[in-house]
Image (cartoon, rainbow, N blue to C red; front, top):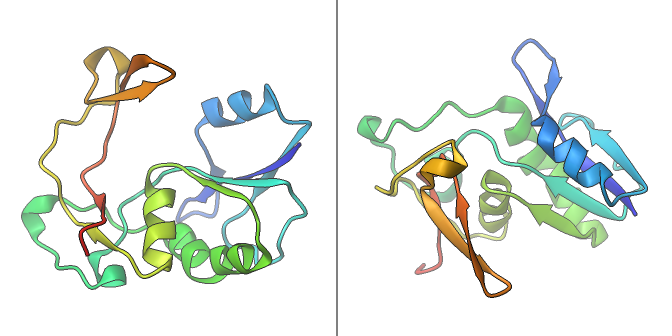
Length: 154
């Protein structure tokens, strides 16, 4: 299986990603293709994996902004990907796996709204879990920086 992994791009133009994603994907993919989020040419891949990143601006989904929510500044390269490149992959019928922010971006692409701020605990460390995930009859701890969430009420 050939997997495309979307990297983030810093303001200085450097491509970055969590190294754990690359290692994890390499454990079962025949190859992992690094995707520059500002490159409009679509890659020939079997699966597109889009990791998380900075907050999605409330203006993208008709939400409101309040300074006390501490919403991070948008990453311009990911915003470009959301607006220009992601729709092309969707139109192509590409299989997509969106993690964290990416799942929210896909939701917004289809007209969904986000809850711009959720007062839930956050943690970057698994031993200080903010959330629990239930899978295959087991609970797993999960760290999280989330404070935005899919709003499936609207």
